[in-house]
Image 1 (tube, one colour):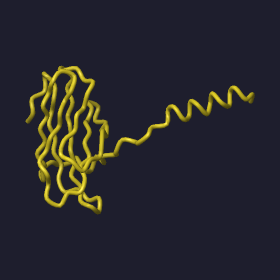
Image 2 (cartoon, rainbow, N blue to C red; image 1 turned 90 degrees about the horizontal axis):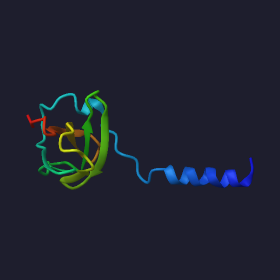
Image 3 (cartoon, rainbow, N blue to C red; image 1 turned 45 degrees about the horizontal axis):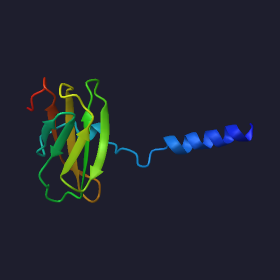
Length: 122
Protein backbone atom coordinates (compact mmCIF):
# COMPACT_ATOMS: atom_id res chain seq x y z
CA UNK A 1 0.00 0.00 0.00
CA UNK A 2 1.42 3.39 -0.92
CA UNK A 3 1.97 6.00 1.75
CA UNK A 4 -0.77 8.44 0.62
CA UNK A 5 -3.36 5.67 1.00
CA UNK A 6 -2.09 4.77 4.47
CA UNK A 7 -2.32 8.41 5.56
CA UNK A 8 -5.84 8.68 4.12
CA UNK A 9 -6.89 5.46 5.85
CA UNK A 10 -5.56 6.70 9.19
CA UNK A 11 -7.32 10.03 8.71
CA UNK A 12 -10.62 8.25 8.04
CA UNK A 13 -10.24 6.04 11.11
CA UNK A 14 -9.48 9.02 13.33
CA UNK A 15 -12.26 11.14 11.79
CA UNK A 16 -15.09 8.61 12.13
CA UNK A 17 -14.18 7.27 15.55
CA UNK A 18 -16.76 8.58 18.05
CA UNK A 19 -15.46 10.56 21.01
CA UNK A 20 -17.92 8.83 23.30
CA UNK A 21 -20.28 6.00 22.48
CA UNK A 22 -23.97 6.40 23.25
CA UNK A 23 -25.07 4.45 26.32
CA UNK A 24 -26.77 1.10 25.94
CA UNK A 25 -30.21 0.81 27.49
CA UNK A 26 -31.07 -2.88 27.90
CA UNK A 27 -34.54 -3.86 26.67
CA UNK A 28 -35.05 -5.64 30.00
CA UNK A 29 -34.79 -2.30 31.78
CA UNK A 30 -37.76 -1.08 29.73
CA UNK A 31 -39.94 -4.19 29.83
CA UNK A 32 -42.12 -2.80 32.57
CA UNK A 33 -42.81 0.72 33.70
CA UNK A 34 -44.66 -0.41 36.83
CA UNK A 35 -41.89 1.08 38.98
CA UNK A 36 -42.17 4.23 36.94
CA UNK A 37 -40.06 7.31 37.03
CA UNK A 38 -41.66 10.53 35.84
CA UNK A 39 -40.54 11.83 32.45
CA UNK A 40 -41.78 14.93 30.66
CA UNK A 41 -41.02 16.18 27.16
CA UNK A 42 -41.40 19.83 26.17
CA UNK A 43 -41.35 20.37 22.42
CA UNK A 44 -40.09 23.55 20.79
CA UNK A 45 -39.52 23.46 17.04
CA UNK A 46 -36.77 20.98 16.25
CA UNK A 47 -35.72 20.69 19.91
CA UNK A 48 -37.22 18.49 22.60
CA UNK A 49 -36.35 19.03 26.25
CA UNK A 50 -36.59 15.96 28.46
CA UNK A 51 -36.88 16.51 32.21
CA UNK A 52 -37.43 14.23 35.18
CA UNK A 53 -37.35 14.64 38.96
CA UNK A 54 -34.37 13.40 40.92
CA UNK A 55 -34.83 9.79 42.04
CA UNK A 56 -33.76 8.79 45.55
CA UNK A 57 -30.72 6.50 45.39
CA UNK A 58 -30.01 7.19 41.70
CA UNK A 59 -26.45 8.02 40.69
CA UNK A 60 -27.07 8.18 36.94
CA UNK A 61 -29.80 8.33 34.33
CA UNK A 62 -29.75 6.91 30.81
CA UNK A 63 -31.98 8.61 28.27
CA UNK A 64 -32.89 7.52 24.78
CA UNK A 65 -35.81 6.70 22.56
CA UNK A 66 -37.49 3.64 21.13
CA UNK A 67 -38.14 3.60 17.40
CA UNK A 68 -41.34 2.21 15.88
CA UNK A 69 -39.53 -1.03 15.02
CA UNK A 70 -38.63 -1.52 18.69
CA UNK A 71 -34.98 -0.50 18.40
CA UNK A 72 -33.74 1.42 21.45
CA UNK A 73 -31.37 4.28 20.68
CA UNK A 74 -29.30 5.51 23.62
CA UNK A 75 -28.67 9.25 23.73
CA UNK A 76 -26.78 10.02 26.92
CA UNK A 77 -25.89 8.91 30.42
CA UNK A 78 -26.22 11.79 32.85
CA UNK A 79 -26.09 12.66 36.52
CA UNK A 80 -28.45 15.62 36.04
CA UNK A 81 -32.19 15.64 35.42
CA UNK A 82 -32.56 17.10 31.94
CA UNK A 83 -31.50 16.52 28.36
CA UNK A 84 -32.05 18.42 25.10
CA UNK A 85 -32.61 16.39 21.93
CA UNK A 86 -32.30 18.52 18.80
CA UNK A 87 -32.83 18.07 15.08
CA UNK A 88 -36.34 16.61 15.00
CA UNK A 89 -39.44 17.58 13.09
CA UNK A 90 -42.32 18.48 15.42
CA UNK A 91 -44.39 15.74 13.77
CA UNK A 92 -41.78 12.97 14.26
CA UNK A 93 -43.20 10.56 16.83
CA UNK A 94 -40.70 9.09 19.29
CA UNK A 95 -41.13 7.22 22.56
CA UNK A 96 -38.55 8.75 24.88
CA UNK A 97 -37.25 6.68 27.78
CA UNK A 98 -35.33 7.44 30.96
CA UNK A 99 -33.91 4.81 33.31
CA UNK A 100 -32.51 5.63 36.76
CA UNK A 101 -29.61 3.50 38.03
CA UNK A 102 -27.96 3.23 41.43
CA UNK A 103 -24.18 3.34 41.92
CA UNK A 104 -23.94 -0.44 41.31
CA UNK A 105 -25.67 -0.13 37.93
CA UNK A 106 -28.99 -1.61 39.02
CA UNK A 107 -32.23 -0.18 37.66
CA UNK A 108 -34.28 1.77 40.18
CA UNK A 109 -37.09 2.81 37.86
CA UNK A 110 -37.89 3.69 34.26
CA UNK A 111 -40.16 6.24 32.65
CA UNK A 112 -41.38 6.89 29.15
CA UNK A 113 -43.30 9.50 27.22
CA UNK A 114 -44.31 9.94 23.59
CA UNK A 115 -43.47 13.14 21.71
CA UNK A 116 -44.61 14.35 18.31
CA UNK A 117 -47.70 16.10 17.03
CA UNK A 118 -49.46 12.76 16.51
CA UNK A 119 -48.27 11.17 19.79
CA UNK A 120 -49.83 12.22 23.11
CA UNK A 121 -48.02 11.45 26.34
CA UNK A 122 -49.87 8.62 28.11
